[in-house]
Image 1 (cartoon, one colour):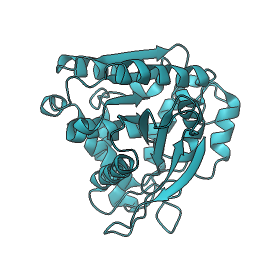
Image 2: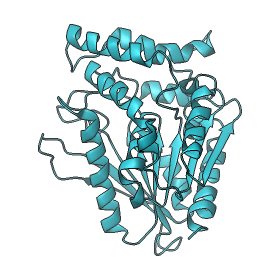
Image 3: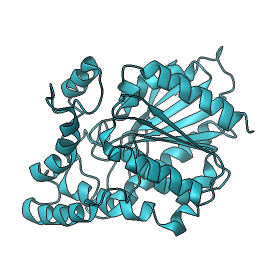
Image 4: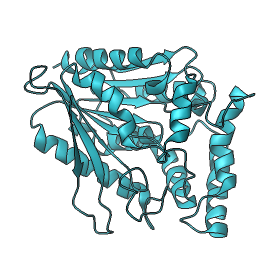
Length: 317
């Protein structure tokens, strides 16, 4: 696998988006068979997808992954950790992803493009699908859920706005962290760490905890941005805009707490099917938790992903 980094030109609000490209060795695939663009989750960074990229590049796919604002290398140079922007942070992250997509299209012209979103990145991907879905030959939602599956979300939006007023937009809120990540871990009590909900593999959990770019508390403004975006993802008029023939792969751990005992997972899959998508594939991994790519069966997950791209995306073409 060939690894290089990239930086996008500075935005009008002074952000330089950083990322990695992982390309197959020429003897594996020349030209590249397909590209996979990664949108990572909250409180992590794109370099964590290097292992997945190793598996995909071995099958002839190129992988591009960028750090969101306030995350990883994009958030390393003086930016507030876990903070998107003063205004329209969600929209600005979507614009950043579009610019990365433009880079992929320039560097790999004519090659089928797949969008891969995990956790918070899967919610960004859900919006990309109805705003720019025609650019992609397929999409993957990992560790995802319906934007309206949690009945407490409206209360969360009120609390997030109150906490933003109390502590300021760029600062974290211990209350918001407890109501989100703290609640996720309850299903695994007595827990060894505060992040047992991520994976059954203790070594992977420890690696996450030791990573200085993981596990930080998000700003109150980021929570406002995220919670405000969720209802729009499930609007019928938006779901109807997603290309009907696009292959969509919705994959999750059976014990992932983000989807409330599979309720949110089923609502998400059913919503796409009910609104006319013809090729929605779903897969659950028994006993697995939130981060499938860092679970005990991670190699199987990557092999299944590569096989799905070959069959559902490239096979259809």
